[in-house]
Image (cartoon, rainbow over all chains, first blue to last red; front, top):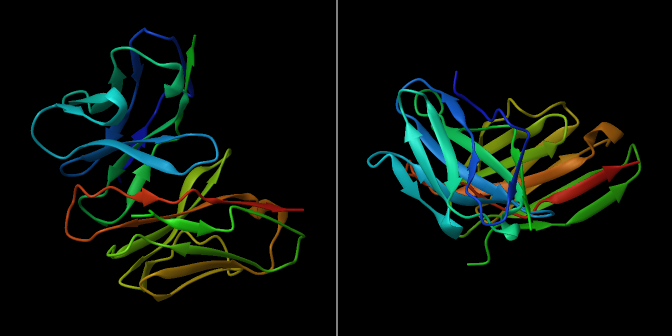
Amino acid sequence: AQSVAQPEDQVNVAEGNPLTVKCTYSVSGNPYLFWYVQYPNRGLQFLLKYITGDNLVKGSYGFEAEFNKSQTSFHLKKPSALVSDSALYFCAVRDFLYNFNKFYFGSGTKLNVKP
Amino acid sequence: DAGVIQSPRHEVTEMGQEVTLRCKPISGHDYLFWYRQTMMRGLELLIYFNNNVPIDDSGMPEDRFSAKMPNASFSTLKIQPSEPRDSAVYFCASSKEGDRGEPLHFGNGTRLTVT
C-alpha cells in the first residue's frame, strides 16, 4: 500500500532560521511525491513535486525538498523562514502502481514561525 | 484561470436537513475529486470522477452521501439526511489527465456545520 508519514504534528522555528518539515513515504514502484501548503480557511496549494531527476527540487515561495531514496524521505526545507510561512503543510504521494489517480496525504504538520 | 470554485463557503444546517455542496473544476481538467477534512481523520478522499464518470466511490462514508457530475464544469456532493458527525470542511479538487506530475488543484472548501 502507498502511504506517507509526517512524524511531527508541529514545528516551531524563529524567523530567519532554516526550517525542515519531515516526510517519509512507503510506495510500491517509483514515488511521485508532492508538498502542499494550507493557509487558514483556504484550500491546499501546490508547492513542489518530485517525479524523477535531481534529488533537490525547488518550488514556490523559496521552498525546496530533498528526495532521499535510501531513507525513503522527502523533507521540505527553506533556508530562512518567514512569519508568513506559518501554515499547515501536507506531504502526498501519487499511487503509481494500483490506482494512478489516487493521492495519499500525510496527516499534516503545523509550522509556526515566530518573529 | 479562476481555479476550482466551490459554493457555498460556509453552510450551517440542522440535523436531518439535506445539504448540497457545489464545485466548478478548472476548465480542461479531466478529473474531479471530493475530499473531506477533519481534525480527527485528516484528509479523506470521498469520490473521484474521470470525464464526468464516477470511478472510485469507496471513500463515501454512507448511503446518505451521493455525488454527481452532470457535465464537465459542474459537480455536486449531497448529504441527505445530514448528521452532526458530517461537520467538516469539504474540498473539491481537479487535475488533468496524461501527466503523472500533474498536481491536484484545490478549491477553498465548504465548511459544513450540522447542529
